[in-house]
Length: 387
Ligand code: NZQ
Ligand code: ZN
Image 1: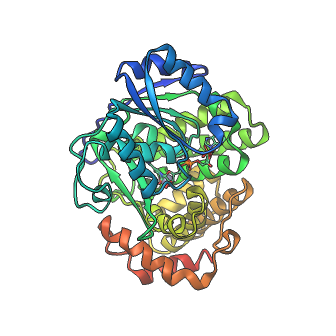
Image 2: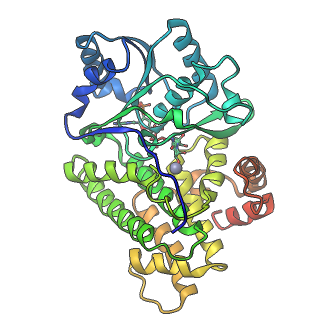
Image 3: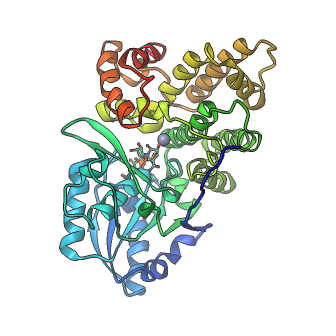
């Protein structure tokens, strides 16, 4: 067990019907909100009227900032900052999936800053202050509802970079699993891939070969996410499975599974962010392509942990560690494919000829995240396994 500091101040209000508490919850943090949301789903489901009626009843006024796209972009985030400043809102209310929450975090920080929003992502400035953020989550995947990070794509430079600050933990996140019943099968699959990837990044890159508490925590969560996803795909309104998936995805990236494992890395996310920056594919779909390829590449070098994963989670009975490690990469790839995600670049319509350009893009993030072992050659080598 390595030393760590764990501090997560987000209050979670969880359960069917909890969305109806949004009015009073927001009113505790201010009288005027910037209401950040996505494109169509909020209107199709009736959630927009449900949330705005609750705000009205609680005496909260709001300014709309809709139209956040999946893989949110800098220009739209800057427009949100302008609205927040012009209307002098007291807080940000985000209603949507990870993209909406991430753009809301960027706006919360940008509204309290005189310089350009991208400064936070390019490490030219650190967030000193942010508006309070309340979230209503509609898609369980990223963990943004209970963490301090956000990811935005700069369309001009084609960089998909993150910002992170203790000021950006949501004050309150409302997790009403019923809101996720309408998430379509493809995004249900991508969510599972994303949450599993969040858990496995730390699990596979921890400097300690065995961390008993965290290893079992991760293995249990991964098994639970796989089981719930299969139940949801068979029955989209499976109340218990949707609720289990929602809380599991939150736990997958709220800092608990990595506390005590030492200095870990996020190599699969580093590479995937280039796929979604360059081709605008869903983040989870990109991870389903990268993670099995990265695992196969790593399995040669450090088979023990991959073999453990294969045995504990996928039921591998092979006695040879290397064989079992390769079975882990294959097993996960097969499962990602079976739930409906692309698992190769070609299945996502990305030509193998683009691999050098993808690798050149990913190296920028490898440098930002201080991962010098990942040169363009290494990244290209990994991606060749995903062609
Ligand atoms: O725009 P609308 O019409 O709302 O449609 C959305 C969107 O098209 C739809 N959707 C959301 N809730 C729904 C729904 N459809 C039906 N019913 C509902 N209840 O789903 C689509 C995808 O939404 P999005 O928010 O993009 O998905 P997700 O939650 O997977 O977020 C992905 C973004 O989060 C970033 C990713 O890189 C990506 O940009 N990440 C954020 C992280 C963080 N802040 O900690 C960590 C992650 O690793 C990740 O990088
Ligand atoms: Zn992710």
